[in-house]
Structures are given as structure tokens and as C-alpha cells.
Length: 365
Image 1 (cartoon, one colour):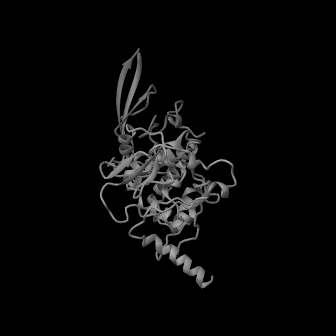
Image 2 (cartoon, rainbow, N blue to C red):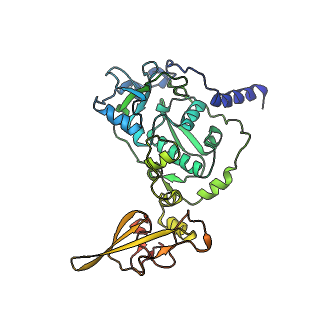
Image 3 (cartoon, rainbow, N blue to C red):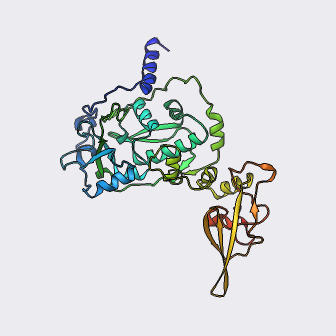
């Protein structure tokens, strides 16, 4: 590697930690109509916002902004790639895909590294990136560009638009919507209400190219091999991983929603494959207390099961429904359930399709 190349790499790596104190809105670095070789204007020149004043309260609520951010709606002649000074452009559908404010620092650090605005990321990029971040945090992998650039592929979808997805064959996050109708006309402008240095911590001007240089290796660098081994043959459902309580638990949302249930249990049930869920449940022990409330309804025994604070209904008779389960031998109780003594219809949230009503146990399709 030449000294000039080393200098470039070092400069990009340092920019992640040493972001300028003031990132002013600059002229967008985008191709014009002639450079695009098209007879029509690019999408960002054509699309105006169709949001209404009544949408502002919903934007603030969904984005977790409270009174710390100022939201304004664009005029008919304003466009997404030219926000007013100090403001940043965002789309309502990005909020649906898990984006919260203030923007999680790992997202702004990644955008600063590849030199694009967060508003240029396609909608599913946010749910993918946040779902990936939940898994990385759970496995204690630092959320820094060095690791993200090893796992994330950046694709240009067209003028001024980029998409983040799995790099290589490691496709373990799925379930994102196939389309978002009308999203290009649902943008707004946003800025912090109080004056604060480094308010966005990344470039906010649009551009049509990206930097993909690998950041320098951190001093303490966990190995991704064990993480990728844990992801092998799994397929996580992105919408399940970006539930509000999980975003709050890992610090990606400040709405203050408490985590529902056990963390490892939630990750198990975010796996899309029924076979994989069943195998994970059977591999580990989990403490669970079951309460049984039989009710006579239309001459039939309707069984109400209260498990982990959740209510389930069953027409199946189970043996010893008030049994208290503990993992044998003091096993770790974080990763699954004990189903050896009796079968449960919905053990602590087990999806009904995973329950085999014939033998009151787990289906192994």
C-alpha cells in the first residue's frame, strides 16, 4: 500500500471519531439531467412532499422526538435533496422501519464513513441495519464502521438513492416489505430545537457516490467468525427485531418502552423457520410458571393458560397444568424452554403453529 493510500485510509478512519464541529448544509453533489443521460428529471427533482400539518404530531410521536426536535413541512416547490439550512430531510416511512431520534450514533458514524446523508438510505435499509445492530449488540460486537463494513453491502439503486443489505452469502435477516407505495412524497425537514454542536454527526448534503474504504482495525477487535457461526442456517424476521421495546433495550430508541419477556426468548421467536425455533427451544432449559384456569363454555372445557404474564386459550387438556418448571441441573434459563415434563400449547409465547395438538408438544416439521 502506498503512503498516499495509507493517508487516505487513516483520514477516513479518523473522521469517524473526529467529526467536524459544524456540518453545514452544502450544495448537493448530484448528477444533473444531462449527466444522467435522461430526458426526464431525476426523481428527487420531481417529487414534492404531500404531508399535511396534522402529520407533524404523528411524526414526532413515531420518531420519539418529543419537544427536542423541530419538524417543518416542505413547501410545494421544495425538494428532499435541498433542506433548509440546519435541517435534515427524512421520510415518514423511515420511521415505520425503526428510525428514531436522535439518530443512533452507529448509523450516523456509518453514513459519515461512506459520505452520504441518512435520508439517502432506502427504507428497508433502516430495518435491516437496526435488526443487524440488535443481533450484534446481543453478541457483544461493537457497532462501529469497521465491523459494519464487513457485514453490509452498499448498493446504488439510482440517482441519490442507496440500499444496505447483506454482504456475501450471510443472509440471515429477512422479512422486510417488498415495496412502500408513495414514500418519495412523504418527506419532512427536521432539526434539533436547541442549538447543539455536532447535532447530526454526519454529512447532511446529498451526493451520488459513496466511499467504501475499510476503516482501520480497532485496537481490540472481536472475531466475527463466532458471530457468523451463530447466524448460520438462521433467518431472522426483521420486523420482530425492531419492535419498540427491543430498540429501547439496546439504546436505539428513547421512548422508554420496557422489554417484554426474556431477551433470548424474543430472539428465538424472531427466527422465521419453525424447525429452527423448535430446535432452539429444545436445546436449552427455561424457567416458566404455568397457571391453569378451566372455564366451561358451550359445554366444552376452555382452558386459559397464564404463562409469563401472557394469556393463552386452549381446548386441549394438559396434564399437571399448574406445574412449575425449572431447568435441570441449574442450566442457564435464558435461551429456551423445558418441555420434557408436559407439552404446552404456547409456552411463554410459542406461536400456535409450532404446537402439535395431537401430542400436546412441539411440532417438528
